[in-house]
Length: 473
Image (cartoon, rainbow, N blue to C red; front, top):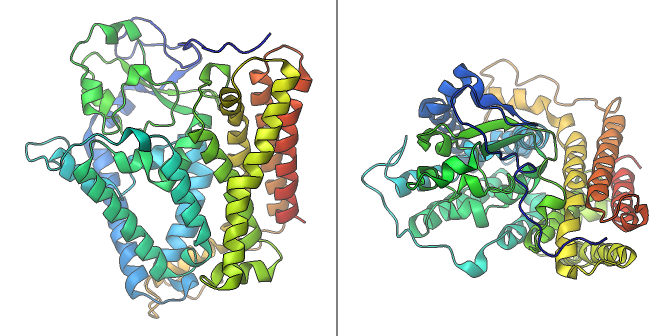
């Protein structure tokens, strides 16, 4: 038995069911609807809580820029480095993405001013809209630019993650690009197609237990105005959602729906992964492989034992850096894609499937998502956890000017994580491997055909061994 060339959209797999809609009475099998909680629904329907959260992150963003541009150049004593690459990084990898998918995108400050100009209002659409409202070029759709932008971040990561000035200028460049694109193109073009963090969070949002879905598809079909689509800053039509990769959880569709037909659900982890999600798109495959390669490279540079490698990554423009850059690109664009393609080709041969190779590779790239998420979480434990005490220090002295506003500037700035970091990292990677094995098993065309999934599992196992070697030794 082989995978069919055209797979029907499974409403049950997507968490979409035809049922009578009504506030507080909707029940979707396999899901826990959070919108059935009256107090939570009132909180979501009001734009003020989200606006206040956005105002807080935007204020923090401006303060980060000021600290990066005018504060000390010593990264460990600068608010910009510690809050972006330690506090925010840890929260994103260990909380926002694993539990909330693209929840960070709902409060991210970078696209906010552009969106406000685009819609002509702060709390909602107004009359003074600005921008050309052009469609994004068809050839540039997908995750290709996000993969490229993440590779660029990786090439210069050693300096970006340690030099406050560089961090501030990178953030300013992203801010300017997001605002400029919002004034030229419709919706959130920057977030959908360019932002490296948007690509990261969107990819792994498929594994998260939070989703926005339509309750009754038939009810949507009878509603000609499509107010949910018109209100969505991301340009999504909720009834057509196959997964959570593109949904920024802004909840505008829920607020705009006049029939209470949008639900925010808790679901089992990894509900978007499986045979019902097979497409022929290779852009997400490329992005998943870039995430794996970058996790390996970051681990080797920032936690590995090779001082020569770390020095080369810092010395931008030197011969050593060019060697590092070529190795980084070769890993992400050649070695890992080649090995994964070989694994997919072997599994296809073992299954005897007639599915096109492109489609087969895209389908089996789903096994990389739990693996990649666990790898980034394991790296964060070793990279960010020991530096968490710096957060208290820079809160007292954010610019490194000798202040002690909260009395915490002189506290110890090291945290001994050796007692739990290695077992935790091993557990995270093992969970990712087992989760990937489960996804691979779901993708197997034949029940009991273990040999058909072994090549993909072998690829995952080699990756886990490499990460364990780098992290634990």
